[in-house]
Image (cartoon, rainbow, N blue to C red):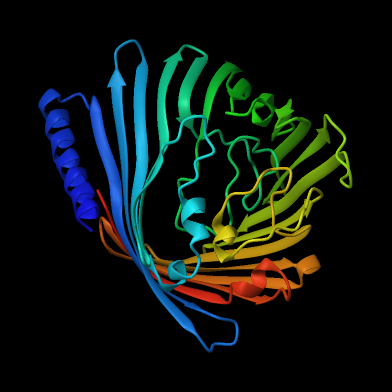
Length: 388
């Protein structure tokens, strides 16, 4: 507990020092932003016979420094103090929470007592250089090549879990990324993410352009000892957004009992109605699906683009509506037919003040007998967030 309060004290001190320095120079050379979030929760089993209470205190810090010669330094991360009855019975989850698959370990477990776990994770730490049509970035960063809104087979470097609503920033990768913009509607990118194990490295080339009022991208590269070819697009049909992406993976070495080539593809539509309702419909084919053993905490872990979902097929419908400038509500429904599972997540969000937001989120899993989803039941979260 002392370590948590020390972390909070450092965060507050860092905030005031940064603001003082930025105000003194008057040029916004330094900035520190972030938020503090409290999230009490209740996890109920599928028979509604047992409930496990929990709470998460989440502090995020985003520090940026604009340096001479068009160079920018960025360091971002999060501190979390988590309490959950479930943690008492799943000792292996602590190892999972402390795992950092990057080239450099920037994840620390600083408390592990009973049901209490304290973690610090740095997910952005890079130097960025911009000049004319060039942009070069080195360090831990997010390389977002995805186009669709639920699953992203084109994201060779940074996939995310659709079920992890408490991590909007999403993970980063240790990489070098070079971008060249020959025109307003085209770009050429190369990115390389080394690994502690050479065959787990990722290197890829992306070319993006616009044709027939549609943004198109093609990708080729090496993904963890697989060849990868991908493409994606974002356009519109009849006023509705039309997006899709697909990546074909080919194992460089043949693996016994597994297909050598797999395809992962997503197709989606989105539409904004006149009354302010935003609708998303998306279908996923996860050709590399392999059943995964584990516990319910695996649901929020990012999966790999060659096996991007805990099922072979997924159909998702999502709708959000703004009832006023300060209040909106939404619901997401995902069907995983091959796992005989349905996921439903309603949410409400209300802005109490300029920097203070309140949110209610529920995640409900039904079906999924003899699968990972059977353990999930339903979870209910109340979120109070102050941003600075």
